[in-house]
Amino acid sequence: MALSLEPELYQVAVDENGTYINNIPSLNTIKNGIRCPCGSRKNQIFKTSSGLTKHFDCEKHKSWLKSLNLERVNHYNELIKSKEIVKQQQKQIKELKLELQEKDKIIINQAKEINIKYNVQSTNLLEL
Ligand SMILES: [Zn+2]
Image (cartoon, rainbow, N blue to C red; front, top):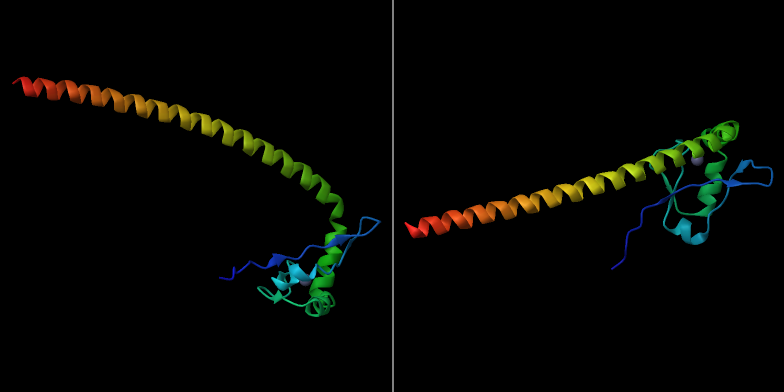
């Protein structure tokens, strides 16, 4: 049974000056298909390096790469912000897990109390 893999999102490379440049992914990656986030053709999947290379020459992709480079100073700041958000969310998840465990304990204890009460009542009923 063959697994159908989701096409990967195209990722640019970075040259020695820190500039984003086009990059042909490995053949294995291309085999599963590549989707480009530049927005030139939505949902188009590239399955050959020649198809992808041809796509790099279209105006939409070129201007996307250009704006990516113009914005690159902000990417570091965005990364720092994102890391902070991930840290906060991990903390929230931990707190929610603890809260959930506490509620589980309460439910178990209440269920025990109900059982005890029910057993007592049924015993009382049997005595009648
Ligand atoms: Zn593109």
